Amino acid sequence: MRVMIAGAGAVGRSIGRELIANGHYVLLVDKRGEVGGNDGVPGAEWLVADACELDSLERLGLSSFDVVVAATGDDKANVVLSLLAKTEFAVQRVVARVNDPRNEWLFGERWGVDVAVSTPRLIAAAVEEAVAVGDVVELLTLRGGENRLVSYTLPAHTTLAGRAVARLSLPRDTSLVSIIRGGRVIVPDEDVPFEPGDELLFVARVEALEALTALLLDSSPGTQSR
Image (cartoon, rainbow, N blue to C red; front, top):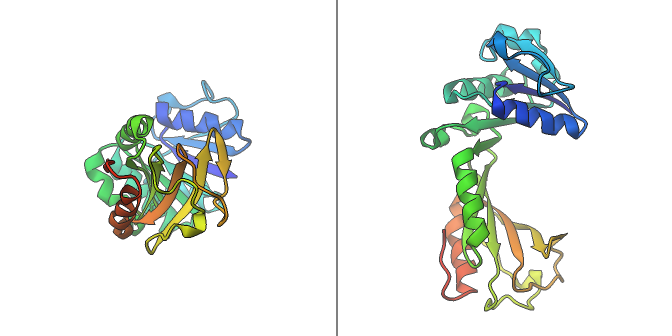
């Protein structure tokens, strides 16, 4: 997979190292010449350029990349790059970093963003997930901000224990995508029974979150949403 990462700071370099370790081609782009070079990111290609300029993106052949990661420390730059990547170069997948959570509403399909990643939200979700047995936790915003990845860990007293997946009547525009049980990832086939301690991962549209939360909390009296 060919990935272009805009922003060669600590975040961009960390992403680049992970992707290269997994066998992907990575081009790091930054307008600051002093950050260029392979120091800290062996195997990456580097280009000094402004990723918000159409001419620069044409020169680097952005249309040949499978994924663009807008990882600069400037939300305006990340939004502009996302829009250009999607509308001018038809990049299949655009992932954008949100530096200020107050700007998260901008990072959606209208601006070319497929996945918006907010570090403060991820940290908060990680904290909640660590203690959130019986709580509904939003982990990630997906697909232009219209969908959420949601986690729910079944407590010991859940009424879902022993019931098959097929018996869980989910709200419209909601899907159970995985069950994590004791470190194992289980495909939620219809006949798989729920067990206390299961972490359930759902993808749901924003409009369905309230109904999903109510359904899960009703199955575990005394719990609350986070």
